[in-house]
Image (cartoon, rainbow, N blue to C red; front, side):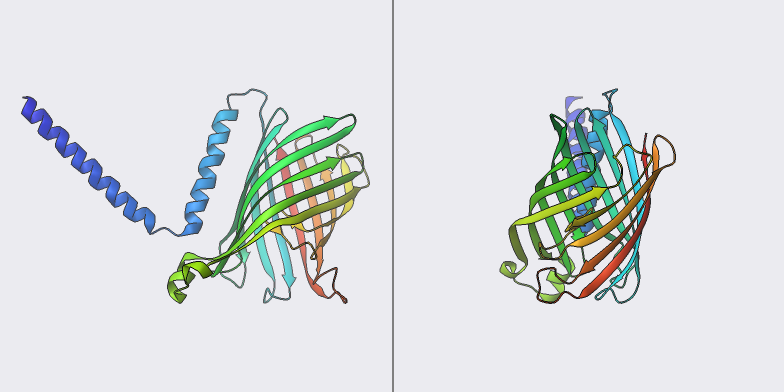
Length: 276
């Protein structure tokens, strides 16, 4: 009887080992973008599970669509993004995905991000410290990862953000295989890049409607070089207590510190925010 039990256990272990081996083979065939997507999804679900036990936690969703054109887009591009966030007291976690609807590069998943932040209040000034990780794909050949930290100060009408990021440009897996790129030529690193944002709003943040102007070199899924800022005209309207509509117009020059600045591109954005 013991011998039969041992044989049965051996067969189970052999099946388990074979199954794991086949699973690993299948996983290695998946591209880097899908693997990163699964990782971000797991982290986000884990956070929801943990904070879901806290009755004070509040979820929120943001959805928007961009339409724009620039000197390298080869015509009009349209993309959408979906971001989820959870507040728990003074802490917040966000995760988001960006997809291309119309794009000459034929890339569906073009970016995803994860960031966590904590609010601090010094007298009447609200400070937010945020750490983030961002992945974007500009084409089927190149991808970019960024991680860093920002500190923002919010007042009645003004908001200022300063931060730094570490950027890595790298060839994607298929490009490495197709062009046989050597290991030491696959990545380029940039350290301690400057991030900034300066905003002015006509009304306080809790007002039913608002409009303002921002000069910045960053967006949800984009961090530009210090010398390539965006000018952002934005407005919002609270339909109800949890739901807000917003619209933005982005304009970018080819470089603000050049001797002559040239037009690069524009983006028009419309979206909705829903805080449960």
